[in-house]
Structures are given as C-alpha cells and as structure tokens.
Length: 352
Image 1: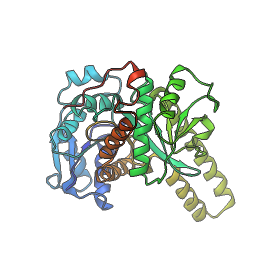
Image 2: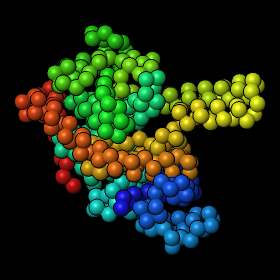
Image 3: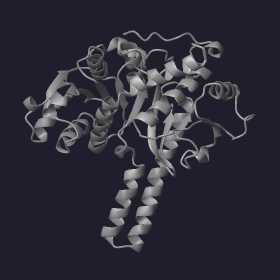
Image 4: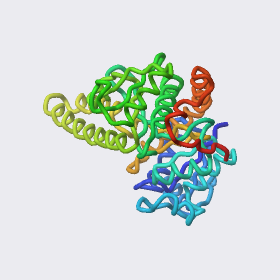
C-alpha cells in the first residue's frame, strides 16, 4: 500500500481546501483513505472533516501544531519550528512511514526540509523542481523552477539528466531531448554558466539539442528545458499569468460566438491543458523520497491532483531511474562523476 503524507496546513487556503482535496482524491478513486496521512493541527483538520460531513476517525491524522509561514526564512523556521506540518510530513517519509510528501506551503521550507531530512540521491549535488506541461509536440519538462537560484554547471547538467529520466520513465516520452534555456540559439550566446554547462552536455552522451529561447518553451523544441531556479520561476509564473489571461480571453470570445453549453465545454478542455490545478504540482527531483510541491493558491481540485500524481510518481520509481542514468553517464565518462572536474562544487551528502 502506498502511503502519502499530506501537509494539510500548507497553502493560502489551508487547511480547508487541502482537506477537501484529500476527500476529493478518495471520491475520485485516486487514493484509498488508508493511503492518506493528514499532517497538521489535529483540531483544525477534524473540524474541516466534520464540516464536510466526514467522521474524523475515518482518516489518519498526524498532529503537527506549528506552521511555517510564507515570510519566514526556511532554515531558521525549520530550526525554530520542529513540530511544523512540513517537517513532520517529511519525517514520515524519512522514517519509512510514508512513500511521499505533498505540500502547497512554503516552497523553500519544503526543499530545505527534504534536503536535510531525506538527503540527496547518490551522486546528485542539488535537487531541482521539475514541472511538466503540454507543448505543441507533446509532454515537456522545465527544471529548475525555484529550488536553486545560484547554480554551477554540474547542477544544470544533472537537472537535464534527471529531467530526461523523468520524461522517459514517468511521462512516457520514448526519446526525450534536452536543451538549455538561453537568450539565443547560437553556441556563442549566453553567460559563462550556460556555455560551460553546454560543454558538459556535449561530452555526456545525453540527447542534447543545444540552446532554446523563450519562445521555444511551448513550441516543443526539446522535451526537457534546463535553467536555474531564478529563471525557471520567472518563466513558470509568467506562463501561468499568460495562461489565465488567454483562457479568460478565449472564454469571452467563445461565449459571444457559441451557445453557452458549447462555450463552456471548449473552455473546460482548454483549461485542462493549461491550468496548473490539473497538472498535480511539481516534483522535487534528486532527493531520497518523493516530494510534490504545489502552488500556494492550490484549491481542493489542485490538492487532489497533487495526491494523484504523487502516487503515480511512487509507482514509476523515478528515483531508481535517475540513479541508474547517473551511473551510466559516469561509466561512459570513465567512472568520473559528470561535471566533477569543472564544477568546483563538493558533493552533497546523501545519507539521512
């Protein structure tokens, strides 16, 4: 049985929408009640379950009286609030009592907690947040979207390696390709970080297709688009804002041209492709365990989607595939860890 720890206190609309999302995931048949562990203030969670007409005794609740607020510094907050919902939820994974943790709360705290309590996978220097979306040519992955804003070449190289394994083994893309997000397609374009990372890719054996510009993100030039967390977060949030604008514009025009029922159906289908609430959150790649990070604005629908995809990630054994890919790449380079000679970065411990 797959058990998932849900940070019920994480998010702008927690615990109400998060708890409702847990109930929705059960109603949809995506998870069984026994597979859920609701982590947070026991009294508030019980009150939300009761308001939804559900007996709190029907769900497992792990009491966590503290919440890390969005304005707090992650590491300081984790040290001061040892009984935080994200901390206790992550500890359940670290101790083997859950296979995954899901949170729509403080992203920095979720990443820091995962690194400290779960550790990184064998050979991985820094974890990265991968978000999947639809492009014109099929599924695509953007990594990193916020875990690491100060990157070295080895970090960006390993993001591509992890994203490639994720696209192939989770999204089902048979032959994923990798590109670096840059200000131009030409090899001479970009800063030192991009150029040194490109050199690592060219000597790695990964299917590297060069640089991709901003307009290539949704055109599908590559399956995996790699960037640092600063750039990736800007791309992600700009895309979300543009998506919301276009959806509202389309809906307005369709309502004027079609019957209300037809306009609503077409709008719904478009929303399923571009709405973050339908895509189930982002996966923190590179840590020992499954960590799904959701949008702070997540409602019940988004929370349910996160739980559904968390279970999918566990079943896909994405971490095993990442480690295998890293070992294969190292073997192809004579046993040296990819990028080790040029990164200047010391390995991150991956023991718990």
